[in-house]
Amino acid sequence: MVPGNELARLSITELGALIAAGEVSPVEATRNSLDRLDRYAGPLGATTAILHDSALADARRAEREILAGDYRGPLHGVPLGIKDLADVSGSVTTAGSTVFGDEPSSVDAELVRGLRKAGAVIACKLNCDEFAYHPTGATSQFGPSRNPWNTEIVSGGSSGGTGSAVAAGLIYGGLGTDTGGSIRLPSALCGLVGIKPTYGRVSLDGLRLLSPSFDTPGPMARTTRDAAVMLQAMADPVTDETIATANRAAHLTSEMPVGLEGLRVGVPSNYFFEDLDPEVERIVRAAVDVLAILGGDMVQVGMPSVPDLALSQRGILTIEAYQNVLAATDGDVSRVNPTLRDRLKLGLDEAMRPGEDVQITLGRLRSQRDDALAAFRRAIGTVDVLVAPVLQRPPPPIDEALTDYHWMPNLTRPFNATHQPVVAVPCGWTEAGLPVGLQIVAAKYRERTALRVAYAYEQSDHAPEHRWPDLKAA
Image: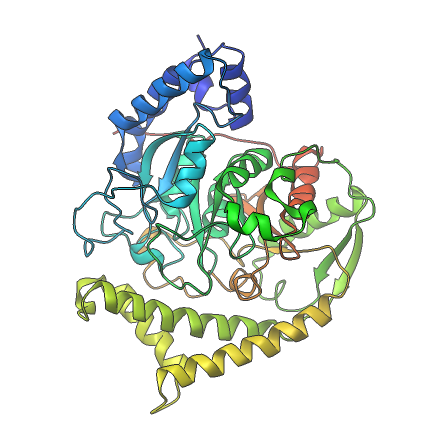
């Protein structure tokens, strides 16, 4: 029997191998996760629900299937968590809000069905910012999610509960969603690997929507391979059938080389490395230098249209978010938190011209995005990946999160505008003991290319050491 603390620190692939070999049972792993969730999720503000009964039922079913010779792969019997934007049958979907009532979902979201088909155990629903509309993790109606590396610091949002729970070893991986950075921000701040897939790669069926032009579900885990295994299970089979065979989900976890020979790695010469905290810049640039050591052909890339991409994305997102909040609250936006209301008002004031009809505004912003996107594609030319920081500086304390947050999605939202896949990977530690993240951006449907770079970096001698946070029980 593997000791509980040691069991919690295994990766998905390590645990999956032990389960396949019969050395650990799904029930043992699930009981350990449920115990850790009971002890630590409350102080971290990580969950909205711990699914004791259904998780153990999932685990027992997985155990019976494996004993009968029906082993489905590395997720079979592994406890995961679902951001509380996605429906899980028998559980309420809150989206971090109280406006949706308390009626449990009757069916799973499409992506949850994919994880279950792979044998995963759904152990909990994970806390998130209200309507997934904040970059800090601090605006859920169920309380803020806290960074396990320093519980006075934000976890990042909106998938803050996922970041907290996975980094603390309460579960082995979890669902995030990314509309302006909400997978990459908490992944970077909690020291995780997060994948924002190509837009449309993972189904939105069964999710509460914020901005359907950009909403993108994806995995958050402790290693690149773990995140890839989750994405393979989550990928929408309908979308998967429509893309080139070489880019289908079946190839995401096949053996990846640990060198980068033959890959052109674009390093932005504008926007992404501007106004960086000196310590963050030093850590990120050192990680970029490692990619050259690993064989990458480094290319400086100027992208003058990125500010327009970011501006148009923010405007479209705000209008769509406002429409969804209005619909959910029956027109009474006073039912949501004041920060959300203020952020919507500020965004609408910036996006809309005086007296302009909202549909005209949307058309203008989409045209602006189209023009900026065309210029962006010309600028990046033939590079295989771009690399950039996730954040410009260390995160704010929770007690400042409602005012000091506007800058946080600056470096992530441009890649929501382009619909490209991005892997966020840990690349170092600040002197204060907080993780720093690197974005690796590939062409649409080329998740495997970004994963190859992330995996090569993660496996190199230059990758940051893996640490574990000290946790305080409830």
